[in-house]
Length: 428
Ligand SMILES: NC(=O)C1=CN([C@@H]2O[C@H](COP(=O)(O)OP(=O)(O)OC[C@H]3O[C@@H](n4cnc5c(N)ncnc54)[C@H](O)[C@@H]3O)[C@@H](O)[C@H]2O)C=CC1
Ligand SMILES: O=C(O)CCC(=O)C(=O)O
Image (cartoon, rainbow, N blue to C red; front, side, top):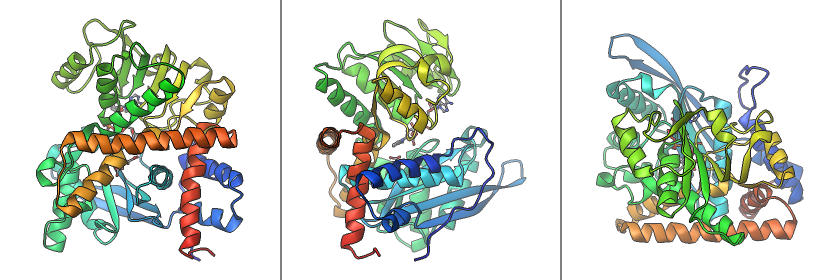
């Protein structure tokens, strides 16, 4: 069997490699499942890695060449599925780790997809809308043979939204000669997007936090919450938690954080951010804090909803939350995860907590394939059913195996993928 080995990049010595971390979690799950070495070897490697050059003519006439990636980890359960990230820190290692996480996430919540992820190393804030459109269309054209509604279905992630999905859908459709809405999810409702997708990841986070509190005999009302990141996921989670009566004391974005111990008025904050080039800093009635200070605030639930590697060996001792809910992918490093566990702080793992997004992506795909579109209430209900079911499976698995929630989520997700591989005869 030909296994894809990632080309070597040269990270700095302090770099915490997300792919190595993802492999460590996989190895722990494999040990718990008593998985054969050969099967572990297969699951440790992405099935396909695509790196493309994206030449773009800038508005000033100059030409720049960007690096874009799409990594397809495993498609034993169905078409590859995963977001597309536009961020300056995008690397092949990062995209590979995120692709692997998608495989376990989809298996965990029981949707028939494999795992993939894509990304372009760029800061979208430094490009005009026209430049971003040219970049997205070129990236899509370069991937034309690797994506498709039954092959690999991209969606939004950091730095992308329904707008980029519409460009991807249009480029793919023009290439094949007819409209193919199912090639992406998270697209605008006008071209086959699903009601509820925009809020879906944040809604899933709210649901998982709610269930975890209920297990402790608590409710969202009055729960003190701190959220890092105020984009698609953090912003939606903040709104829904606020609506449910939680006290959202602090939020942050890339420009810094704001804090009010009595709770922030989230609808007013959203209106302020919309008028203030999306920045939250300076919101009336709040105190400015740094992202470092935000992570150390005393609270009931800390929700990292921005980038990976935010809670590390260096700052984990400062965390003063009862629960850390991983809305971002990989926000807690491996060493920090062990330290939180040792301190009795519950970590709600990313592959469970942020799965609401891909669940509604699946519902969008199903609606598109059947040409029947649902109202938002139905979408939310179907998503909630899958999320609550997955949460209870994970807590049960954790109790049965006497392992933390992350390892329980991994044994379920990895175990299902391993079983499918074996049943399909793909191994040995
Ligand atoms: N969009 C989706 O449906 C899903 C996203 N996720 C994950 O959620 C996380 C956030 O994604 P989105 O909200 O979609 O991205 P986004 O681009 O909409 O928002 C990212 C937010 O993080 C902030 N941010 C960036 N760097 C920061 C830093 N160093 N410190 C504090 N804040 C910072 C940005 O200012 C922005 O508010 C990512 O880890 C992503 O992989 C996971 C599942 C689905
Ligand atoms: O909605 C999707 O297909 C993917 C979402 C995603 O990228 C993620 O869950 O990390």
